[in-house]
Length: 251
Ligand SMILES: Nc1ncnc2c1ncn2[C@@H]1O[C@H](COP(=O)(O)OP(=O)(O)OP(=O)(O)O)[C@@H](O)[C@H]1O
Image (cartoon, rainbow, N blue to C red; front, side, top):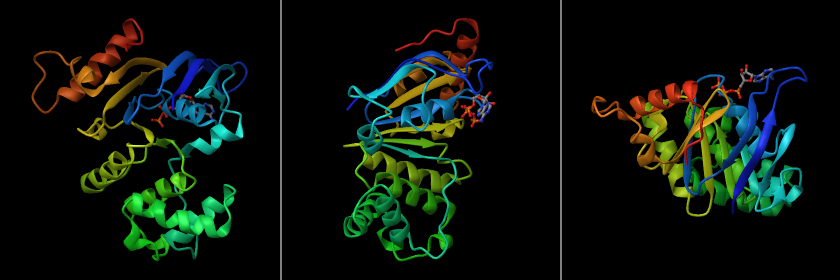
């Protein structure tokens, strides 16, 4: 299951400067954290990867299936920054409703909703109204909704924004547990999201990938004198500076 962006260019508006220009990217397996400062192009990359937006030039494919095709959209799930709690619906009803919208029968969606909620560790909240869930729990409902139709790739746009450290930890554990059969790409501009369970890191600066590879390889970019506990931050800073000077993609 390989998701690739090939020579993708995207600009907001006909005369605007491209946000992404001739970008090549292959999503690694497991859990990948997409790092980059505000405005780097993370959301744009995720929207292209999800097939929500089409590139002006280039292509996005999952094992050779173009992102315009129904089969691509069935296999690739996208979770936007804001998850809406639907008035009057329980967690299970909200997830089932999403499954039904995606073409499942009511019965299949209802059963799949229970399985999806179990995967995000929310079985005990299945009958709770989504309006009554915490922000972190509601994001997990968002993940369950994204997964309800058995997606193989999950793309999440800043899912941990506004979470406290404990909520972040729970959320990351939930994602890490999915990665046996789902590839996950999670965008953030918070280096604290880079935890042990993230197997890969991709760094985006001004629309250029300055690093994509293992977490260990990423950390190796920190200067030797980086303070203990600040190695990830130092590596991130080093790659940002590198980008401004050279802008190559490192594998
Ligand atoms: N709808 C839009 N119309 C015009 N320009 C846009 C639009 N959306 C994004 N942009 C611009 O495209 C660039 C990349 O934006 P994008 O949202 O992809 O970055 P990001 O890395 O996700 O940023 P953030 O971390 O702030 O969410 C920015 O310069 C932004 O101003």
